[in-house]
Length: 314
Image 1 (tube, helix red, strand yellow):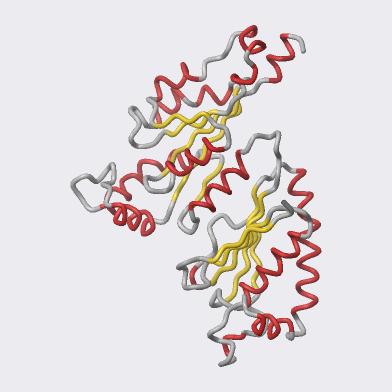
Image 2: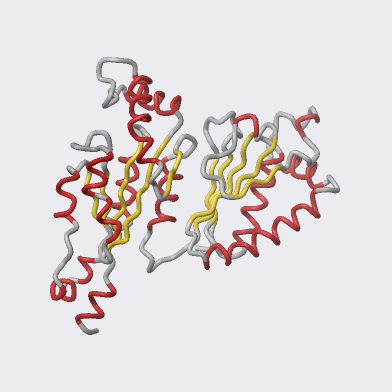
């Protein structure tokens, strides 16, 4: 390879990780480090340009592997000079660099979830050392609205386990030499709200509800008797056949578009019977395509002790 072509081929990935305190930025950095990123936390913005300064052409050709290693940088309210003015001054110019592929990731969470995490860990909020945690959360949200609006990807971690977040980040940001569509199937209860970051949502409340059968009510969609009850509904077979065909036909299209992460949500009233059963069946059907599938039942136990299963061709 010539020197010129080597220089052209190298475009370093720079991932700027930011967001609300308690939303999982530390977990995200650890996950990114595990998939090959260099990780820097809380670097003053004024030093960023030195960290990612353009390499000389001969240096790029000599050390292409090192120059091409992706970099994840965490900046948030702890960072010195972290405001709109310095963002425009120190970060915005990087977006026009031909040698950088810059992505801004914003991690968020519902206020109650963030407050609960601070309470459980007994850590002070960086903006509320001498006041209630919720005050700090609200102040921080006001200060970060401008940044969230500029994000390339916003992830609400309220309903995500640590493993969910790690898989999501791996799906979005793994090295392009190993492209793979990561698929999550999640069942949920409509009264508890739609899952965060759902790409496709399917409502199965039209199916016969096992909740009204006294012998089935204490069971779940993981139980054989519940499955038989739902399958006995004349609406189930044509619905599921159409759903399966549609999803299998969509996956290659998403992959061609470069999508690396897909969440399929299936909802019913209680999140215990119909949605759980259909989500399991969707996971099994998609597994047969040879892809790695993770199935999660968000509300199976009232939102606690979520049951998760990972399936794949491995």
